[in-house]
Image (cartoon, rainbow, N blue to C red):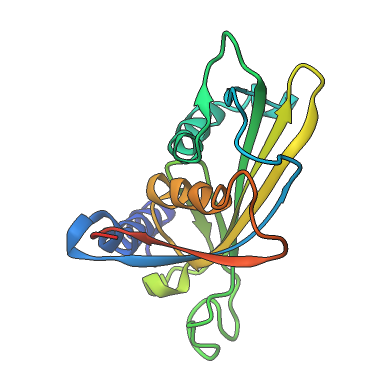
Length: 210
């Protein structure tokens, strides 16, 4: 029976194989379907849409938070906001989380997710770190399925009143967070500053040409 080190090597290969179509650029595309819900008290685009990032206490000690903010920056810029740490009129707090779920494509009668399973999976960080444990046989790449969520909260300074809040959720296969999270932030910022009320679906194409 292969040892833990060999199992991890196999799983890393599978993770890279699953992400390869996304990273192939124009050679492949993937439609990222996001369920988005936004809330706004902004009547229109702010006259001075400058912002700085705000962090919770836990985010202040999280080494991955600066990278996450870097992944959110393009979506904020595309929405019309401009980062200005020296003279901000707003603060922006961003967060992201991901957890493994049962793939809709997994065979319920075979493999570690079927009868007699027992796999444990973890997934997080802007670079898509993966940790698994369980029986020695690895499942196919399509078995790795995740629920991802990003959120954006915009506060008016100096009072701190929340004027915009948006969440985007996606359920899909293992993909590179460096491409998935910016697209999810883009979906969360769609319609800013006056998004439509209620839940909606926002599809973002990854790879290829829009």
